[in-house]
Length: 342
Image 1 (cartoon, rainbow, N blue to C red):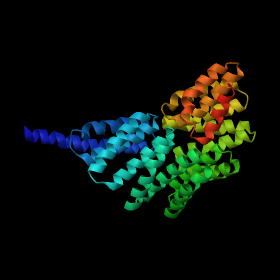
Image 2 (image 1 turned 60 degrees about the vertical axis):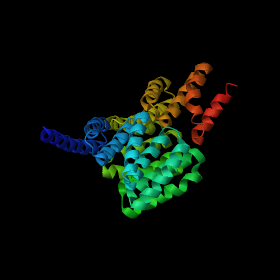
Image 3 (image 1 turned 90 degrees about the vertical axis):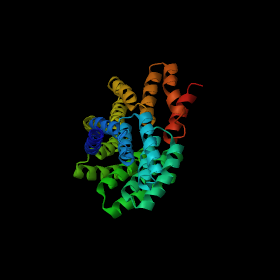
Image 4 (image 1 turned 180 degrees about the horizontal axis):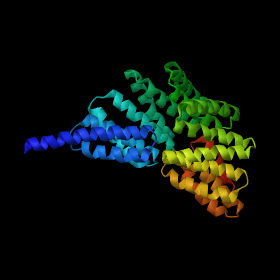
């Protein structure tokens, strides 16, 4: 009987490994829904199997899938569990990788200070073990957190270090990510020329590599540049493509981003009726990713103001933006909106 039991455990362990690999494969192809299901099955098999390292890897992977589906609370729970196991195993590389994902999770959720304090030790760990690719990702997230919380000058050093690392490695996927993030951040602070330059470079690389996620990222900034420069038709075309690809990916954080940007383009072009459902869907899809929800909410609040509903406008933004006031690029808009009602 014990031999049979051991055989079952070995089969479960082997199957869990296959499921984890398949989950990573689907995640790598950016089908996060299918990747989530497979990885969740792997965690369920590994938990009683006793292979703590494999379980930690699977839980960290599960955290990535959940983050991309905007399930922040559950993502943090899985990542914290993975981090605890890696600490018990004295696995510095595993700890660094997990902290990098946790840091990204926190800045997307609007916890800028938490993101910074998570990412700084992650970078130290990743540098110590020579994991340069993940270090680049952590530097990008740190650059984003510092920029959104403290301004462009604060975020430039880690962003420059990330770009230097990506170019030195010849890692074009990473370069597209760095440049796409640089465009996104420049756009948030009204640096349209910089946003256009970085976004164009990111899009060229992403299209060449057929990397759908970074294509979506670059299209977001480029569409916004065209909208602000008065080319409404091109903005709608770029954001429409962005939304189409984002829906193919099935990643909630990208679908929310695309919905919000297309709604924003329609709003700026005067199509208020067309903008509203997209903005409302964006807020719903964003889930716990406050960074993805705040700007559609601000536009919906402005719509309510135009309709003579100031109380509704204020109700839309108070809960979401009070916790986001430290994101200086959004905080100013939120504060101005609230001052309007005083």
